[in-house]
Structure formats: C-alpha cells, structure tokens
Image 1 (spheres, rainbow, N blue to C red):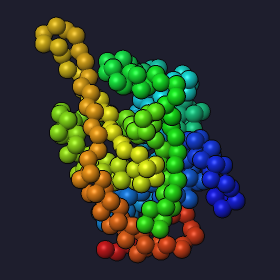
Image 2 (tube, rainbow, N blue to C red; image 1 turned 30 degrees about the vertical axis):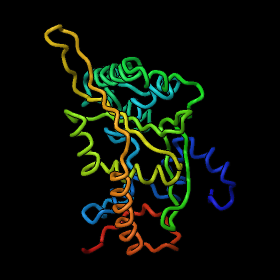
Image 3 (cartoon, rainbow, N blue to C red; image 1 turned 45 degrees about the horizontal axis):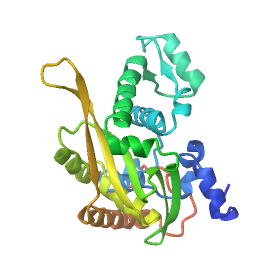
Length: 266
C-alpha cells in the first residue's frame, strides 16, 4: 500500500510491525542502513535486503530479549549441533529463513541481555520503565528526502537509547568504530533529526571478561551519549550519500529505491 493513501498515524502503526518496516512498505523511506550502502565503495550492493543474515538475526534476538521478551519466546532456535544435514535444511525451509541461531549462540546472547538489564542501575530502571517507549518508529524529511527510523527505547526524559553489541575492547574503540566503520554517526544525525531528541548508544562487549581470578565472568557495558561533533559528522556523510542517491535515482523517481543496480561504472 502506498504511503500517500495513509495518515501519518496509520503509517507509524504499520511501521511498528517488522514485516512492514523491513519489507516492501518500509522501502518507501530511506534509512540509516541505506546511507552506508550509498557510499561509492558499496553502492552496487544498495538494495540488497537480507532480513535474516547472521548479524541481523543475532541483533534481533538480543533486542527482543530486552525490549519485547514475549516475542523472544517464539524466536526460532536450532537445538541440535549439526547444521549441515537434511534436518537443519528442512528446519530453515519450515521457518522460511536462511539462517537461525544455534542453541549455544542463543545462550550467549541471553546472558548478555540479562547483564545489560540487571547490572547497570540506570539501564535497569529505563528498561523496566513501563512508560518508556519501545521500538517506536518515526518518519520525516531530511534534505528533501523521506526517511524512517525505529528507536529501541525512548526514556520519559526524552532520550533515545540505541542498544548495540560490540567487539570493541574499550569505549574509545567503540566510538571510533561507530564513526569510521558502522555509521553510528549517520544514525545519530538521522534519529535526532526525525525525533528532535538527543541520542545515547548503549553497547555490550560480546567477549566475556573475568573478575580477577575469581572464575566469575562479565560483559563490559559502554554508555555513550552522542556529541555535537558526531552528529555533525553524520550530517555531512548523509549529505554525501544523498548526492550519490540523487545522481543515480533522482528525487522524483518512483521505483523501489532499493532496486539493485548491477551495471554502474565508477
């Protein structure tokens, strides 16, 4: 259904459903992930929608455990160890997926989610706050183009909180990777532009660390409010990405903006 036939409230309600947000309906808006795909080095990949690639599936389960625990109960998990046989292929076919979590992987993610919910007082208060908004979509225009975003959490104080898992070994490395590899700066700019709210990233290290020689382990948690410098850098990168978009699609083109282009020459 075209967005032109719906009110803004109807659009937001529809985008709350993952099937629509990541599917054909949601592709009527640009998003932060598109900004990465619109860089000169990756533009040929623009349009490849992989809602069940490995990183997406792991991240989705992590988010559901924290934000939508009722949904997490039905998350598809492969309980056996063998993934090369017929049974695994039939399981994928039954679920309509290309990848599912193994039980051992799911357990690691579950432990991470438990830590981020229980070990940090402010996060515990936010995550358990029934008044905080969860998985809240926003739409709007940025530089004349339609954009969407979906916020993990919005506190009663009006702060957008985005949850991440990371391999960074320090908060400084997480910030550097966010700006230089993972486009967290463009995410901060887009989300703040659409919501009018400040943004904080909360990340948990995927690798366990030991408390001394106690035999007890934990995951490092990084809390990173976005700086004006980060948002400005994100703004500049979005402007550059949209120049690429306009060059090959144009503002007024009607076709699916995620259509894969194979014959572009740079």
